Image (tube, rainbow, N blue to C red; front, side, top):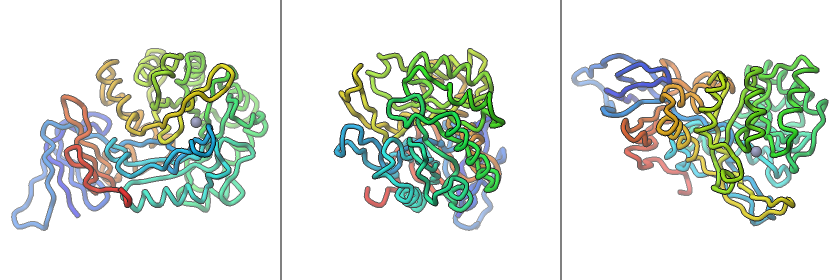
Length: 390
Ligand code: ZN
């Protein structure tokens, strides 16, 4: 199948100017100033991208794809994600995680859901494990999961600095990181440890101690929720200036922002102002997570569901409200997660890369059309491919 995207302004994410892009099957075949259609040629779909920006499909690398939560009893277990929630938000690659409940949410179900989303047209990987240590993997060993299961690319989300964490020691977490590192090396996957960081003043201390006392490099860790409060955010700046990755969570509720959460668009600006290289920063949505609101006694007082649509919405705010150039801001949901997670086919518009492409309206930056592996999923803001039960 051939698709020609004509006359769009391409951010690959680097700015390439006006280009024509020919999609051949599920890959990008050619990127040229002008691609002419031969007369009497085979069937080819032509998409006019005049007045549009052309950017890589978005990567959301921390989503509770099969649902999560349950922190307010069984009826608060959140539902699984549907295909068009992702595609309408420009997301063409998801990384699924389990979360707090490592008992009724299992690795087998997580991988089944990931494969389902793949069948429906997007790309989906998973991490192995949940909040708890010792980790519950699929095969019983982190290395085996990484080497034998194609969908599994790393470990997580393991919880630290949180009342819901199993309070792992430095030694326990170091062993997890080294197993992830070995499994990653042997399978040519990222093998990073996605770490859920909670509200505690312990912050990133555990990770810093591992980096100081072992040979495990700081980039073995991929800590998330770094914008959840101002004191963790400050610790996150110090961690990033030492070379660590920092991931911000875009899903939020007004209460969190009132309580001191740093809005992602603002967090990006503040990190850049503090001279953190943009390549170390990513956004993820924490989609389908429960967003529990606890009072000062630790009692649950409210619960909402994280939305993947918040992922790009914060990038848009970073451009429109914080004045960050599109080619910089867009990296936090395209080329940066692709490099950190070693997704070699993803995150950039380039010849031979997967044809995951989003067209944005030039003036509003709204998502107009979305291609996943060469297939048109969203056209003029409407889902043209739906999930099996949508
Ligand atoms: Zn989390």
